[in-house]
Image (cartoon, rainbow, N blue to C red):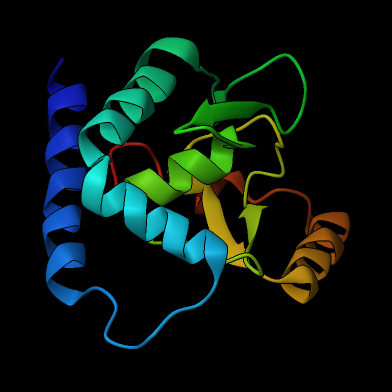
Length: 150
């Protein structure tokens, strides 16, 4: 129960900063605007869905991956929008609005993983570099942030 409470508190602290600093320039990216709408009007239900995903629906493995779904890139629905579960988890955990051009990268190389501490944003070039690094060195489990860090 303590992890659930501290995770909720961490997200709400980030949310407070987001509301204070949001949209200093005009934004036209539809996905970014959707995230902003979620953060400003539906944060309570978004955090509740996130906590259910992380603490009830996902299962943890020995590397700290949180497995969700019966196939890679499993989707969830929130506010009539379907998006990948890991994208939703990252967006809510970090309170960072994601644009249409940003890809989610798995440091753990596990497309089932929804652990926001294993996820990064990037572009297609970053994704390809990740692939090459994994081919050359494998997954560097010791470098992944644990659930208790952050």
